[in-house]
Amino acid sequence: MLENPQMGSASVLNQMENEGKKLSKWELCKVVKDLRKFRRFKHALEVYDWMNNRGEKYRMTTSDTAIQLDLIAKVHGISSAEEYFLKLPDALKDKRIFGALLNAYAGARMREKAELLIDKMRKRGYACDALPFNVMMTLYMDLKDYNKVELMISEMIEKNISLDIYSYNIWLSACGSQESLEKMEQVFERMQGDTTITPNWTTFSTMATVYIKCGQLEKAEDCIKNIESRIVGRDRIPYHYLISLYGSVGNKKEVHRAWNLYKATFPSIPNLGYHSVISSLKRAFRKAKTFFSQMIEAGGKPNSTSWEILAEDHIRERRISEALSCLQNAIFPEVSKSWRPKPVNVSSILKISEQESDMASKDALFEVLRKVGCLDDEAYMSRIRA
Image 1: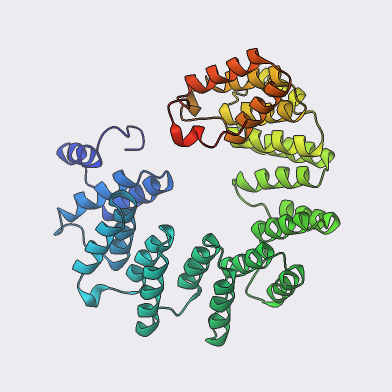
Image 2 (image 1 turned 90 degrees about the horizontal axis):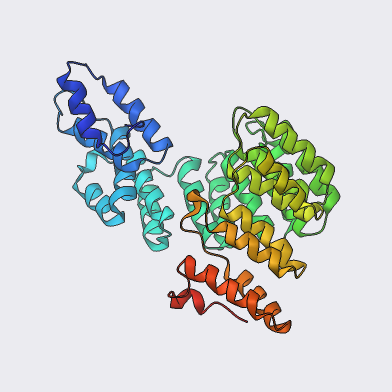
C-alpha cells in the first residue's frame, strides 16, 4: 500500500488473503499507523473498512473506533464524522472517542461545536487530563484568543490537572503572542520548577522567537543554544528552526555551523532545509546568491519557493532583470506545479518597472503570470498593486 498508492487497500489485502497469507490485527494496525504517518488517510480508512467487513475475525476496540472517527473526518469531512459518532452506542463512547471528535472540530476551527463537546466531556468526567485542554488551547491560539488559553490553564490548575510539555509550550506561545516577556518568563520559571517536565527544543525556539520579536537578541541567542542541546532522534525540523533563528539574530557563523551539522546528520536534505538556510543567510548577510549557486553545484534541486526567495533579494536591491530570471526559473520545477508568485513581489516589480519606464521587464513579468495561470484569476490579480 505504501509502495503502490494507486491501488486501494482492499485490493491489496484481498490479494494477500487469496494467496493464503494470514493477516493479524496487530500487523494491520501497524499498517494503519504507517499510512497515517505518511498522511495516506484514505488508504488507512480502507484498511479499517476491510477489517470491519470481517468482524468475526478482527475485534475492534474503542481505540480503533477513535482512530476511525479521526480518519473519517479527514477523508469525508466533519459531517460524516458526526454521523459516525451519533451511530455509536452511548456506552462505547469513552474519552478517546470524544477526544477524536473534539480534535476534528478543533482542526476545522469549529469553536462553538468544540466548546459544547468539551462541556459534555467535563460532565462525563472525560476532561481529566491535559489532552483535551491542549486541543482547545491550540484552537484558541489559531483563533488568536489568547485570554481563553489563560482560562484553560487556570481551569487545569484549579482542578489539579497536571500540565504536560505541550500545555506549557502553548502557554508560552500565548504569552509571546501578546509580547508579554515578563509573563512568559514567569511561565518558564514555573515550568522549570515542575519536576515532571523537561523543557524541549520547542520550548526554547518559542522563547527565542519572542525575544527576537522584542529586540532582546542576547536572550534569544541563549535560547537558541538550548535548542541544539535538546535535539533528539532523526528529526529534521529542529535544524530548520536552529538555522532560521540564528539568521534572525544575524549570526552568520552559527548559520553555517548549524547547516554543516545538519548536512553531517542527514545524507539528503529536503527543499525545506535549503529554504531555511537561504532565508537565514539573507537575514544574516546578503550572500544568498553565492550559497544558492553552491547548492546547485552540489546537486541540490531548488524548487519554486527557493527561486522566489532569491528573487526577493534582487527585488529589494531593485535588480529587476535578475529577479525576473529567478521567477522564470521558478516556473519549471516539477515539484512546484501549483506555485504562483506572491502578489507583493509582483506589485514591487511592476512599481519599479514603471518608475524606470522599463516596459520590457513589465512584459516579461506578465509572461510569467500568464504561464502560471494568474492572468485569468481575478481574485489573484485584484491583489496586485502597481
